[in-house]
Amino acid sequence: MRSFTYRSRCSGEVRVLVNYPHADELSKLIDKYTGCIMITPSSVSSLVSFNKCPRIIIKDGEEGKDIETVLDIIKKSIGNSLDRGGVMIGIGGGSTLDITGFTAAIYMRGVDYVNVPTTTLAMVDAALGGKTGVNAVGLKNVIGVVKQPSEIIVDLTFIKTLPTSNYLDGFSEVLKYGVTMDKGLFNKLSNNVDKVMSKDEGLLEDLIYGSLVNKARVVEADEYDKLGVRIVLNYGHTVGHALESASMFSISHGKAVGLGMVCESSIGVKLGYTASDVPSYLTELLSRLNLIQGIKVNTDSVLRAIAGDKKKSGDFLNLPMVTEIGDWIKVKIKVSEYLRLVRDSCTYLA
Ligand SMILES: NC(=O)c1ccc[n+]([C@@H]2O[C@H](COP(=O)([O-])OP(=O)(O)OC[C@H]3O[C@@H](n4cnc5c(N)ncnc54)[C@H](O)[C@@H]3O)[C@@H](O)[C@H]2O)c1
Image (tube, rainbow, N blue to C red):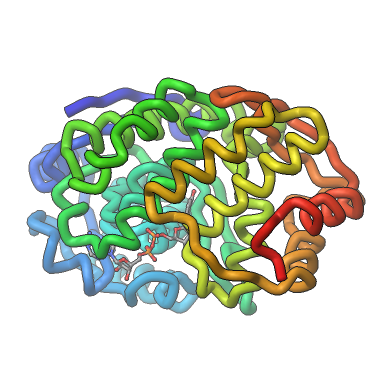
């Protein structure tokens, strides 16, 4: 069991608990509030052993992450007399936590919320940082706000029921924190892939704790993504998101980000920012984690998706570039130049 806190400019101190039983911690926490509701998808509901708050069951995964679900949660919260002193508890993967955070941010002009992540990706990434949102008008995360949770409770028992591909997907983000900011974390992952495969509890606690501490440090420095620090969390994601959408989401998020990091590091080598051995280190580790997928994606679709990236600023992209394992810098590149580099550097484009 390990814990830490980080500071939010708007919400104060956020407590992060790693490898704690969710039911015990939630029982203690709800005493502080006038009421509570719990939001969870149907596939996770049977795994939840906490029964002291009314449950709102939402649709699984991305399907439930829309404005209709928000309105449904609001209606049921009113029905359960949740007032401004109440708390919303999200228990699920990243989709559930995103929708819980967004609903909590707007319900009665804002109530507290608590994240209990149940996928690896949500444990190392989505649960912390306060970026909440829902999909609308055919676009992902197009509506959202930044609001930190009051508490994050990581309970490793949820990992047991995750399908292998879903379980491994989250390790791309662990690798991202390691390669950009934390060589020790990179080495811990690299030296213990066998323990990742066997879901070794001690190792998982270390990797999740290390990932969340790194992300919290970035969020404290640039909570609202205005100062150019938080962009480090996008490493591998500019190309990764384009691969996901160009492949009609047939490539998982973890694999797309993994391939994105290999491509972005190859570009970094070409531009002279990145040490020449970084792409091969990444490829080797991703392959041992079964996160390299041997499929080709249409080049034009990928380039079109990058050209439409919402992080673009005029004709330029501000991107994180790894210099050596555990360190990064911010780089500004003309979009047209970046598209040429992607075309020349990403080996999986067809
Ligand atoms: N806010 C952020 O900072 C942030 C960061 C990364 C990703 N995200 C968002 O997270 C979402 C992806 O999250 P995800 O990968 O966790 O997927 P998800 O929430 O879509 O869940 C995937 C599937 O796993 C099931 N599931 C969840 N926990 C389970 C368990 N313990 N056992 C068995 N099945 C379980 C879910 O019901 C669902 O069917 C995306 O919408 C993405 O935009 C947000």
